[in-house]
Length: 196
Image (cartoon, rainbow, N blue to C red; front, side, top):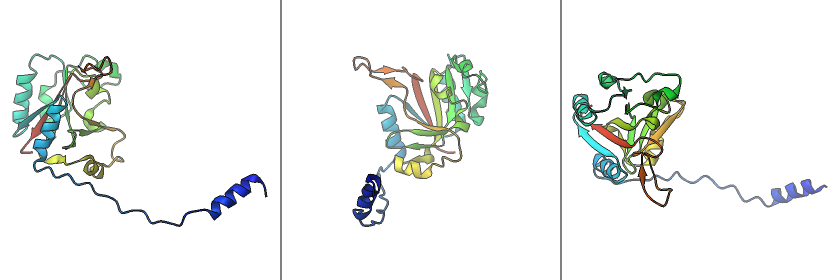
């Protein structure tokens, strides 16, 4: 018997007994108001929650808040009239001058204010990260309590790419000084539709 056979035989003799897999733990979050928790966390990480009744109010907010921005891209069909720049480009470098991107999220997560955006909703993968400012539209009824609930809702086979986005870009790598917009959008507003 060679050394390989001796090692495998020893392993075979010392195997632990079969153990059934544990029950899947559930993680419950008892937030009494998911929209309030989502908004609280979003403000804490530097974003701006905006509660509106519908797309009409969302358009009004965007026009009032971002009226000075000349290059706007909208991936939201109900807000397409706000777009001043074409988003459907082959070369992502063509998006480097986008001032504002408007994107619809699929669902949000109350515990960290992350929003799931699959590729078909975000346009080019680089769009939410290369724009100067980002507005995300989300149905208030599509907020789940925590990431465990979010992953249960995800179907990664539906989209080739997707990303959770939470708050504006920020870093504190240099001298522990917080810099907003270092690696992506300088601001993030999340427009929560109450009646959609």
